[in-house]
Length: 292
Image (cartoon, rainbow, N blue to C red; front, side):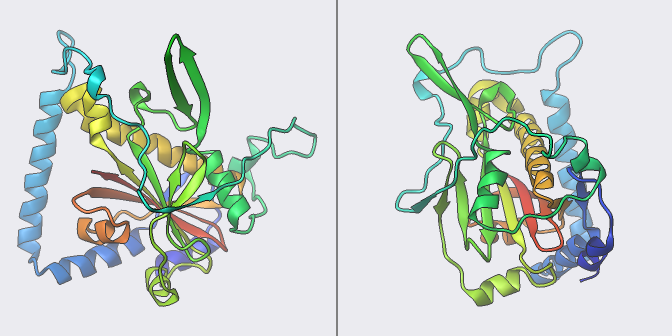
């Protein structure tokens, strides 16, 4: 695939998120043909969706005179659970990265953005490091009888609507469990299916996805929740990009897939997605942002 070939030859700035438009266009084109929609119908649909977004923006934005509409209080009896779990799924504990004092030979912060970092192999240890440095819990807070957690990736109101998912050849189908720093295996896919999913990508590819549970935000922010979910997905994408850079991996955006394709890929029906990817010469991962 042309986009993948370009990526293998292209020097990049570590930690930045790039797009692979050729890959996205190829997928988008195939999905539009399979759906049977004509170009004119597709254009009308885009115009209608843009109009809906503009209307939403106008109705939910703050002004110099007033705040936007929102809940008048918090319903503590119905506070959303910040941790999603899949009942019956097998849980694989990840490695906890030890806290070690910095040494003279350690990787300096500017280096990951200015120079090549020797890529680490994709294994349980490097995947543990990736999730530990991007989406794991960073602290527990206590005030009186209340306890709550903080995470590495920032979130509006500390509500954390963002969920992470991983699909790879090495670890065949997992989603992250940040509370226990573990992987929750939702499905095991065949070699044939993985070869189809990774066709055109560099060997050792890793797919990384995000979904957003809007209820966690709307509980506090009401109809503005959609804004904050997009905001938080951006934080999560940035966190994964920087964590990947420290492993010698790069990040790329693939944003041309249909809702149906991505819903099927991550077994999340009735959602809308945005797509990112993380990869180096040996490892390629795709990160998605979606709304549930």
